[in-house]
Length: 161
Image (cartoon, rainbow, N blue to C red; front, side, top):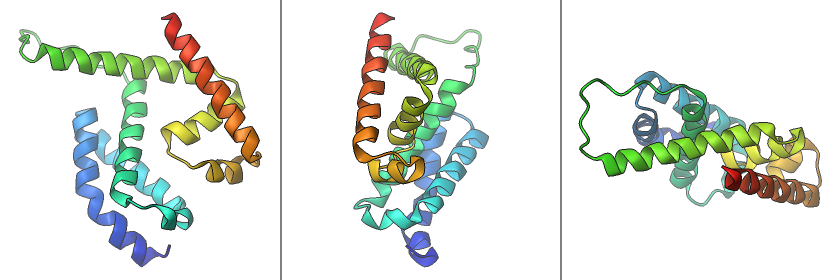
């Protein structure tokens, strides 16, 4: 994919990606950083993006994954004084999702190096197995095996909480 194709497919999605990042992170600066990170990753992967059927869905998934990683890694501000309970069901669900994401990121960080690398590339960054093989020098079977073992360990550790 050359620069003009990249610009025509992915640059028009910037506002939508920013809106999603802002919705998740709640900060304009963090949202801008997340979108910039995603654009950087997309540009680095431009050679393999020709096989992407839906650039919008692909880039939005990358934004969501990046924002979840960013949100899990930063402390949450305390609720404002006098906050009401309106919408507490949505707030409760959001807090639960955020807590789960933080726990999963914590569990991922405890995995052996190769498993952590493969899970981060596949599930967080959205890389395909072939991209992981190229980046790590591992065989296809080894990538699948590491991914399977890592996911099993994550499920087991998550179930213990």
